[in-house]
Image 1 (cartoon, rainbow, N blue to C red):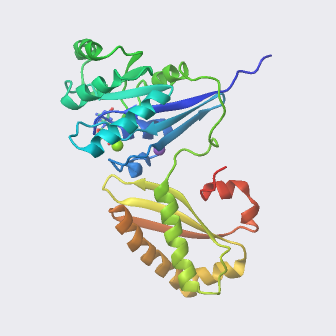
Image 2 (cartoon, helix red, strand yellow; image 1 turned 60 degrees about the horizontal axis):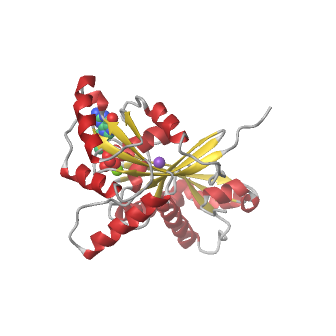
Image 3 (spheres, protein in one colour; image 1 turned 120 degrees about the vertical axis):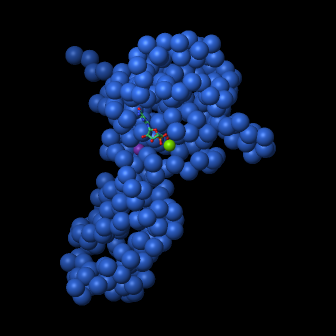
Amino acid sequence: MQKKQFKSGFVAIIGRPNVGKSTLMNQVIGQKIAIMSDKPQTTRNKIHGVYTTPDSQVVFLDTPGIHKRQSKLGDYMNQTALGTLGEVEAVLFLVDASEGIGGGDRFIAEQLSKIKTPVMLVMNKIDKIEPPALLPLIEEYRKLHDFAEIVPISAKLGSNVDTLLDQIQKYLPPGPQYYPEDQVTDHPEQFVCAELIREKILHMTREEVPHSIAVTIEDMRKEENGTVYISAVIFVERDSQKGIIIGKQGALLKEVGKQARQDIQRLLGSKIFLELWVKVKKDWRNQERVLRDLGFHR
Ligand code: GDP
Ligand code: MG
Ligand code: K
């Protein structure tokens, strides 16, 4: 029996604001965290999510928006984005199927003619329309670009998302697994939050707790009401250290939480609900998985 060759590659997602890029990522990755990465107008490409199956891996890139802009900076960013789009295996061009083609969609489609990468037109929000309404819209989009695939989906309901993932597989060349399968997203915010919590602890415990503590963010998601829920674990190496960090009747941990929450709130600009746990993990420094969780990538 021959083992199937592993395939992998990078896929960029573009589309004007509100078409459902984050919703699609959340649906694919299965977590409610892509929203956190939404910082428009950054020039760097961010990893939006990593989707791993037993024989393939897709790394989704959140392309800095291609926008109609008059400024030099806008030109530069469009160049950066186009550079990325030219290098990936496939581009997912997300549009809102419940609306007509807008100026933003048209502008992106125009830019796409400058690259050779296969473009998949992903028509989102089909749950909001009657199927026949899709046909004339497809015809209109076809006039703008020669799409490699056209896939109608509902990112919100998850309809046809599996078909989309199947279609993407066709464009993946043989390649390595770039990321551990349990890593779903690259999250600078998580790293910074962990650092803020760590800093508070070190500050408040002075010399009593050595630097052998680590903080990992186990969960971070935006609730419907806009509050960002964060669950963090503080790892220590000894039971005595756990006692110190928790403090008398939990007083010290409570104060750490209060101060860290204020900082994180300022950082993310949203209301924060912060939950802190303390766990003893002997020799955590030798454990690769923990190191990975802490952001030490290979
Ligand atoms: P982004 O700006 O492209 O990242 O768009 P978001 O993922 O933030 O989605 C914008 C809005 O469209 C949100 O209110 C979503 O709930 C909604 N939305 C996204 N996908 C769908 C869909 O498939 N169907 C419907 N009805 N709404 C959707
Ligand atoms: Mg978004
Ligand atoms: K994600």
